Image (cartoon, rainbow, N blue to C red; front, side, top):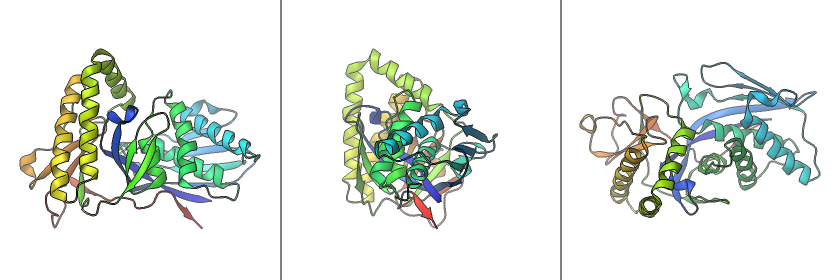
Length: 311
C-alpha cells in the first residue's frame, strides 16, 4: 500500500487553537510526504527526514521516536477494539518534501507522519478508513507524543485536506470552507526554525500570569478568524488578515517569540503575516494576483484532498 499525505499550515489563529473554543483557519499544503507498507515478519518503520540521519523504529526498540510509538499504540487500540490484529508490515516514510534546505519547514511534518501511519495501519485491514476516523486516531497518538498538549489543527488539515475552520478543545472539530478568492498565496522563509513546544510553553506561562489579557486575545483572535472565513471578497479578507497580523505581533512581544517578516517596501500592495511560532514562514496575501511570484517568495498551493492512495 502507498499513500501520500499533505502538509499543513495555520493561516490565522496561532496559539488561540490551544484553547477550548479557540478558532483557527487552517489548510492542507500541496507538499506531500509519501509512505508505503509491505508485508513483513514484524512491525517496523524506517524514515527519511530532511537532510538529517534516517530513523529506524521497531517494537523491540521503540525509543527512536516517541511519536511513532504513540501513533502505533493508538492504531493498535482502535484495531483491537474492532477485533482485528495489528498488521506485521514494514513501513517506509519519506517526509523530505516538508523540509526546506534540510531544516524543518513549518509544514506540520509530525502531524502528517501521524496521519500517514494511521492510514497505512488501519488500511491494512482492507478497509480504507474515513478521514474522520484517521483524524481521531492520529490525533490521539500525536497528542500523547506531545504530552497531551497538541491542538490538532495540523492533524485535521492533513486528514481532511482543503481549507477549514478549526475549533480547539478536548474534542476539536473541522468545518470545510470554500473560499474562492483565497489564492494566490505566497510564502517567505524566515531566518531560522522555531521550537513549537518551547513557544507553546511560553504562551502558557504568559496565560497563567495574565489571564484577563489572554481572554481578550482569544476573543479578538476568534473575531479575526470568523471575519476572514466569512469574507465575500479578497479585499474584505485582507482587512481581517491585517488585524490578525497585528494581534499576533503583539502577542509575540508579550511571550518573547518575535516574528521576522520581509520588508513590505519590496512587495506589491498586500498583507504580510507571520505563520507558526514566528520565524519559520511568512504569508504574503497580495491585493491582486501578480504575473510572477515576488522575488524571494514561493507560491503556496492548497491541497484540495487529504491522503491520496496509490494503486
